Length: 75
Image (cartoon, rainbow, N blue to C red; front, side, top):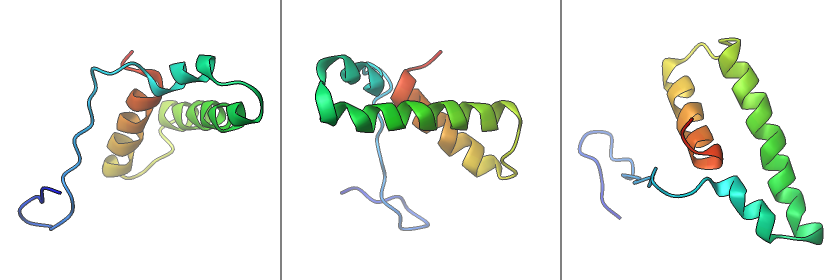
């Protein structure tokens, strides 16, 4: 795995051009659908926290936003 110079943490490439992850929920039925429903609830909580500016750390805000882009796509 490629490394970043400096902090030694892994370099993670997130393809933002992909379809939103939660669209996969349409293809899942039954008990296997529960994790997608949990992610939708988490998405709502994270969006609310961002809207209310509840995160003090700018780094956390950026990471949460990036995670939401993966889940729901860029809006």
